[in-house]
Amino acid sequence: MVMPKFRVTVAILVVALTALAAEKAEGARAFFVFGDSLVDSGNNNYLATPARADSPPYGIDYPTHRPTGRFSNGFNLPDIISQRIGSEPTLPYLSPQLSGQKLLVGANFASAGIGILNDTGIQFVGIIRIFQQFELFQQYQRRLSGLVGAARAEKIVNGALVLMTLGGNDFVNNYFATPVTVRSRQFTVPQFSSYLVSEYRKILTRLYELGARRVLVTGTGPLGCVPSQLAQRSRNGECVPELQRAAQIFNPLLVQMTQELNAQVGSDVFVTVNAFQMNMDFITNPQRFGFVTSKVACCGQGAYNGVGQCNPLSNLCPNRDIYAFWDPFHPTQRALGFIVQQILSGPTQYMSPMNLTTIMALDSTI
Picture 1 (cartoon, rainbow, N blue to C red):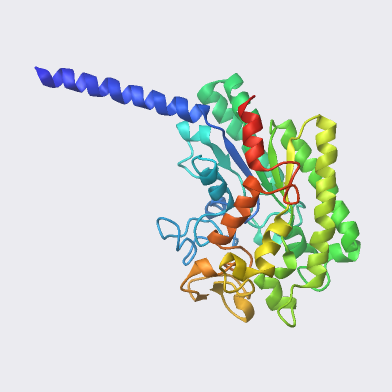
Picture 2: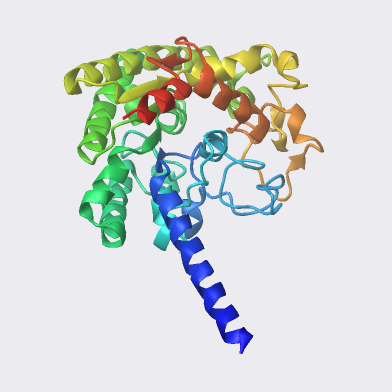
């Protein structure tokens, strides 16, 4: 006669714990991610595109030691941000696991290979371009409304943290993709940078219209210093001046544009992340950060391990923690940790107009 009571008690406890978990998830800040391979957590695994990170040795340092679709040896940038702010990692929007209460955590819409422009990354075919990512975001919002109601869904979206990472591919996989390109015949580098920023403004404006109210916008990193560009263009292992100049023209224009948008909407919605300087810190002085090299990728082939893509037949370093770059294009998990630290607590030279710790403190009072 005791067993039925015990079962009822257990059933009540399970229901209570489930409700508590749902309440906790609903009370936590959602996180939405848009952009390219620097932040793609696996959406491209579900697409017919060569821009995928679904084979070893990708994911070698991930907890499962298996490839996840992240262009990293382990965790990627949004993963580490989630860890540092005490949130669950966001799932790729195309993942079948993203349903039910998981929707309350947010979603990652990023797709490797995309750019600000629709003609960027055409060689990668079926990728999710930025306005298609926004269409999926609208679909997500409808699903969220079905779960928690329209008013609660709107509040979750408005209160979310958003990460937007675009721009690098527009230079390396478009303007500078070959010695002469359609875009390089059409524009000088300063003209192209201005054009990119004008198009980026439309993207951020649309994101605001879709409900985003706190957006981290990363500038381009030091494009001329990645192993792929050293292998293709550098004669002595020094960063490639043309690409460095492009990033240094583009990034201040991006900061200016976000400041104008903030003035237009009357709030510090858009916060720029100086990814260029964050990366240059460990590229120019790798030993200070515990790296043996910031020129040679851990995984790759050819000069600087910067030729082609990381694959099962590539050279692979035994210790990823002493390399700044994982593959020809992307930093290692450990290098990303230093970047996230600056996102969290860096001064205004890194985060404008404020860092993420300040954002979290301000928003907690709302």
